[in-house]
Image (cartoon, rainbow, N blue to C red; front, top):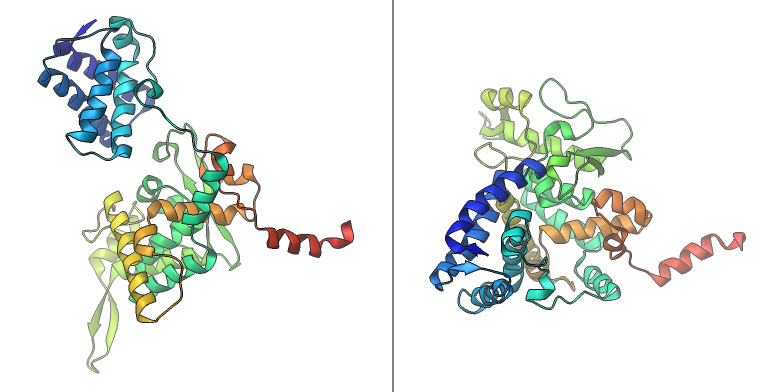
Length: 358
């Protein structure tokens, strides 16, 4: 058994070892510390003096119920809490002291595995078609924000995760950068450009991987850089012209981070999420204003993760499962398989084109 008052000591040891082995970010450590500490505080508040093999599962169930009922947390949020707590409880030192068998999530709550076909239908429903994603980009372009346009284009092209996008550095885009900090455009406008995702920015991966953006997205990145180094100023003819801001232009020559906030620092995850939600709302306002027949409620359905779903679904129309898996960074092909949507009419067209082979 372990006395509850000793759990914080075990928690410090656990997090130190985990950070050393997995090289976790400070943000991740902070979140896990918070989630596990809340459980320890709950045990104290309930007058629980110790955890042992007889009461550990019971207390975990009680805490989960407490989060749902008393604290009013969402089920997905509580699941994250419990995953962090279970990993701690199952750590070698804690498990040895309590002398319990490894505890699984299904011991705390019945976890229902989603049927593969159901998962496919769900992702197909929430992914945007080519036309719908173009409508989103066109709406952002009309509103004139170069950075927001470049961010959303990068998502829809690459299928990268939110964390991967915010941690992108300028030199992760695999084309030369000129002396002023702009990307040198390739001669071929149909070129797909490699985007290098470093292992430390990816989700639970131990190796780097590559995804892609299009030539047009690379152009949008240059437009974004130009926008943050220039300022519109009225000339003697009362015409606004872009004027280069020397200090900002000088910073841009050696800037490391690709996407920035209004203060010129690396943009955060919440900032990107707010950008996507803002333009989703603008899409719905445009649909209503222009009386467009559209089945998608952008405000309700479009998020950062949906843009990733969209990109991977688009790739799945062209590439093999293994190729999409490599781009997505999935650990197994079953996850990737959810993005493969069978279009029977498309199948018939492909057969028709290749009819002479039969």
